[in-house]
Length: 132
Image 1 (spheres, rainbow, N blue to C red):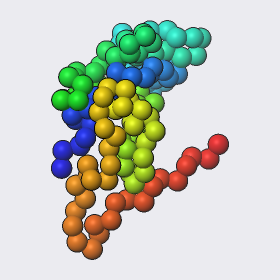
Image 2 (cartoon, helix red, strand yellow):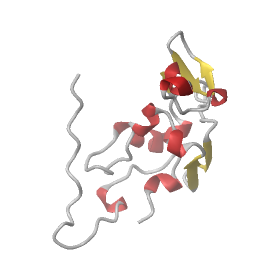
Image 3 (spheres, rainbow, N blue to C red):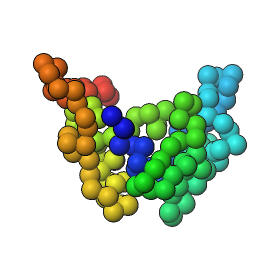
Image 4 (spheres, rainbow, N blue to C red):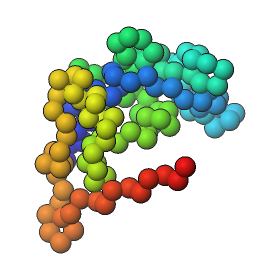
């Protein structure tokens, strides 16, 4: 199965990507290259390009809706790891849906996922919400 995000890229060209500055500091366990970020406030940085009126992350290598990849996928910010594609884990993702609509694409449905056939053919159960 080809992951729907590989032909999308909409979220990386819709939202501001802000996160704690420590994610750019290797001595604190950070992995995001600092030169790909800019200061947002005393506690947060943003991925370059995402704080503009028409956001587009500097790490995005894409033709939106055709092909997409994150050039720092393995070391991307924590906030990027927290946005699933709709129905990837058995539930709609409001952020995914909003980004796709903003770029003129239909929202993902269960039919966009190739689940295996057989006794375990049900999509995975939705993730439990995180405790506040």
